[in-house]
Amino acid sequence: MRISRALAAAVLVLFPLAAVSQAASAPARSAHTPVQKAAPPQVAQTPPMGWNSWNFFGHKVTDQDVRNAADQLVSTGMKDAGYIYVNIDDTWEGDRDASGILHANSKFPDMKALADYVHSKGLKLGIYSSPGPQTCARFAASLDHEVQDAQLYASWGIDYLKYDLCTFRTAVMTAQAPDDKAAQMRLMVAAYDKMNKALKATGRPIVYSFCQYGWDAVWEWGPSVGANLWRTTGDIQPNWQSIYSILNENAGLAKYAGPGHWNDPDMLEVGNGQSSGPNNPIRYLSSAENRTHFSMWAMLAAPLLAGNDLPNMTHEVRTILTNRDVIAIDQDRLGHQATRAYSEGELDVWTRHLSGGAVAIAVINAGADRYSSHPFHLSLAKLGLHGPLKGKDLWTGKDITLTDNMPIELGSHDILLVRIAAPK
Ligand code: GLA
Image (cartoon, rainbow, N blue to C red; front, side):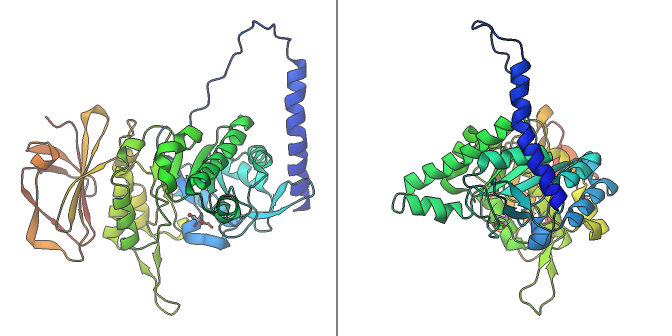
């Protein structure tokens, strides 16, 4: 612990010196020499994919859990399927020293060594902070230390920052502008921009993930202050009600998504569950719920950050998380987020336009019962399409032909997800 603190401090001390000595040895520029600006590194051209510690490990996450997750991403084939970021969420932070440098707590003895380990697997490492004095779990955060923290992250080799509003709200927004909502929002935007500039100044490509729960229509201003993604809602929970309501809250946001800037309906709960009380058993998401959740996050062009216990996941959960056809929808290079085409009773139909003129169609049964005795009839006309349409059912892997008003039977909370190559 001591050694790593000393190392981190040394890197931070050396970092600005290195920059100064480079500048000193560079040939003198005449006033007319055009400045060669390097193209800014492009990150998040498709929605980021990876794993985040919060949804399963919460406060308990340790260095070993993160290493295990990295190992599992490789051994399960998830890395090959596109999951690259290994993101440490809240509770890694320790104290600041006399120079203001933040150190990780005892759960993370050597952050640089952890980053090196994750990088050695061909993966990238993400971290978490807040613009407030403390994080949501009340650990030290970045207020008044933005530049120092950004440089610290860069010195460790961090590739992704989730920046969570948390205590900035009370400590700064309501404290400085108690009765002025507009001024509070300006303070919030400025805080996100401050860290944006600090990250950019490191010169390291770092994905910048906003977490302020969708306040003040973040999708409208986020990209202008560096957001590569922004949470659109409050926290997800591992139950159908939460997943389905977040899905619907994202229905009107398609036009804000695109390469480099994405709506974030929160991290995946695939494979997770929760208990309704201390003595009650955990109710895991059903197979259908896992499939629908994963499919619809792909339709939303959402970041796919698995949030489950990778070393102990079932074969079924792994199969869902590595469905290449579904991932290909999420990662489609056009980045056009799906829209909800229509709903009828408890069924919803969504469509997403994909590159090469392809279309993805999702039909969800949000009801508690199976639609069989009164099957739902899919109207292609309402989607602006005409049958018959040949496509692939992305969960059975089989060919399917959609015809107008065809009856569709779906179990409770299940989905039909079809990719049509290029409808006429
Ligand atoms: C907030 C965020 C969560 C998680 C926790 C950590 O609630 O929305 O995603 O990061 O903080 O404390």
